[in-house]
Amino acid sequence: MDKWLKKDLEFIWHPYTQMKDCRDFPPVLIERANGIKLYDDKGRFYYDTISSWWCNVHGHNHPRIKEAIKRQMDSLEHVLFAGFTHKPAILLAERLISISPKGLTKVFFSDDGSTSVEVALKMSFQYWQNNGIRAKTKFVSLDSGYHGDTFGTMSVSGVDLFNKVFSPLFFRSYKIPSPYCYRCPMGKKRDSCGIDCVEPLSELLKGRSREIAGIILEPLVMAAAGMIIYPKEYLMKVAALARKHNVHLIVDEVATGFGRTGKMFACEIAGIKPDFMCLSKGITSGYLPLGVTLTTDKVYKAFYADYKENKTFYHGHTYTANPICCSAALATLKIFEEEKTLEKARKIMPLFAAGLERFRQLPSVGDVRHIGLIGAIELVKDKRTKKSFNFKERIGLKIYREGLKRNLILRPLGSIIYLFPPLCVKKDEIEDILNRTYAVIKDI
Image (cartoon, rainbow, N blue to C red):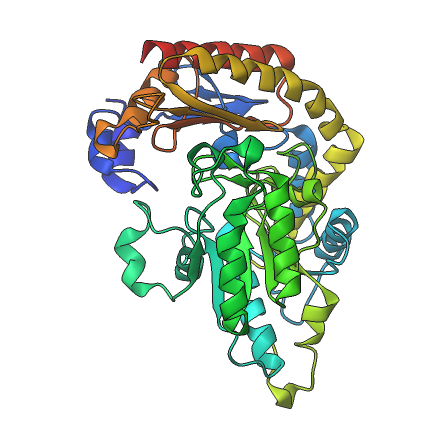
């Protein structure tokens, strides 16, 4: 084994990884990257088909983002953000508000996706407390949702393999069935369902809205749940119910934001106006960690008071609004505008969708779903019964290993293979990725 990998296994504990597996199948040592390709220490390339955990938007080694980072380092690397401010944060906040759904007017900075969601939960909770509505202490979330790895975000995520061990430490929240069209919780078919899966939420709010502070969900795409893509009508109905019952709507756009669905933000497709929008990942195109929570004037004003009233939002992080991270984010947004990233990506999206549809003919493929440049292929043992592979069969690990042999970074979610390429992917690259992925599934 290479000396670097020996040192890795001696000193490092990797995330979401059973380290014992690494004895026989060690991590891939990446030396450099460019565009949508990563290169290991032997010069072999891999298509970054999952955008390095869904965060890379404009490709690796983009000169404009690198230049923005270097330029900022020459003037200011960091300053505490309580009582101080700086131009990159001000400019970024202004820019985010200008491109976000109408009504979102205030920006709170944090460090990553989990903390952006944690901020929204805490703000929502304290909003009601500050307004004297003490009973509103609970949240509603989808039973297969994922919102992060902090205890707060795990509490509003589905309880599964990832977090079950920590469940005794979660705060209580209400769970409603996920709008999973392939495995409809109501036993209906999409072409005639009438979005009946929203009824459990409607019933819950009828009886419990006095104690519910907010509902949180990922708009249109439940990423970690298996890239479950659901109808925009469901999101529209959820938003209407939240308004009707005086409950905050929190949209987690950590994975879906910044062009992934064909719009800058997924909630734009449904035309909704959330009370909170959580952002991270693509905000810096994956170059540096940064989280953002946007909210409304109405929420902001509930905290705006004399100090003695004790309505201050006591939350913050050492690296809140780090100038270098904000500069990387500004460069990312400028690239969207000046290089017409979304316009170019939209030309690739029909090709991507058509290429995915041909996977349906494979005997082990139960469902194919896609939106924008997000696609998923759900593998099943039996197409008729939709019987899934179980975890012990480790079909995902087999796919991952075979993918590496074919220059693909596929990291399946259980038995669901997904593609989540950077938006800068080109036509010939998409075709090559789809062909190689098809061969992997066919052979496995």
